[in-house]
Length: 254
Image 1: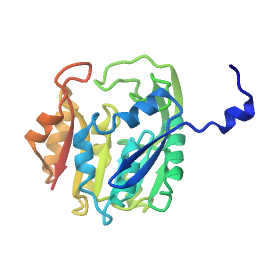
Image 2 (image 1 turned 90 degrees about the vertical axis):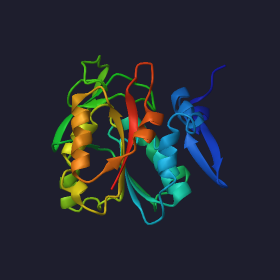
Image 3 (image 1 turned 120 degrees about the vertical axis):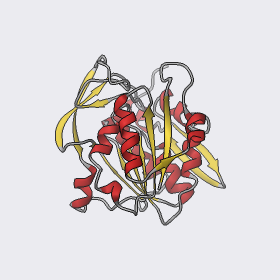
Image 4 (image 1 turned 135 degrees about the vertical axis):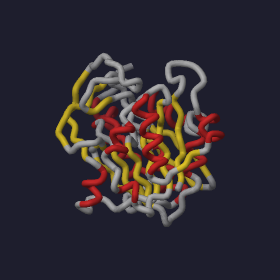
C-alpha cells in the first residue's frame, strides 16, 4: 500500500521508556535506532550504573553521542547539564530531535563536531550508512582495531582538541566525560592533557580496546593524571567473545 507525501511527512516513529517515573521519548526512524532504545538496559549496564551517579551539579561531556541515548538519560533522569558532540550528520539530526522531544534544550547543547588530537577539517569515513550507525572514523579510514576498513561515504567533518575548546571558553570544564569514538579514544585523550589535570574533572567512562597498544598507553597516561580504574568493573564490562572481544568501558575516577 502506497502513502502520499503528505502522509509520509506526518510519520513520527518513536519509542517511549518510563524510568523512575519519568517518560523518555526517542525518535526511531530505523530498526537500528529502535534497537538502541530496546537494548539500553542490556547493551552497557555499567554505563547506566555510571550515569546514575550523576547529579544536577554535574556537567557531562558526551563525546561520540550518536543519537543521544545516554545524553537524554543523563539530562532527563539525573537532571544533569550535558554537552553532546556527534559529527555524523544523520545521528546529529536525531540527537537534536531527541533533545526537542524530551524538552531538554535548557539542559543539553549538541554540537556537530568531533574531538581529536588536532584542530582540523577532515573527513568522517563511514562504513555503516544506517541512521544510528557507528564505527565511523575521523581522518584515517581505520576501524575500532585501527585496521583499514571499507568506506561507503566520506562526510565532511570538523574536529578539535578539547584543551583548545576549553581554553577559548567554547565549553566549560566538564566534571564527567564519556568517550566512545570507535577506536580513536586515545586521540581524544591526547588532545585533552591540560583539561584532565583540572581537579574539576572527577570521572571518565571510556570505551577501551585492550588489544591496542595505543589504548594501553592511554590507560597509563590517565593513571599519571591521577585517575584509577577498578579491575572488577572492567572484568564485568569486557567483551569475552565476538568481533569486539577485549573491548570494555573503563570507568576512571580520581
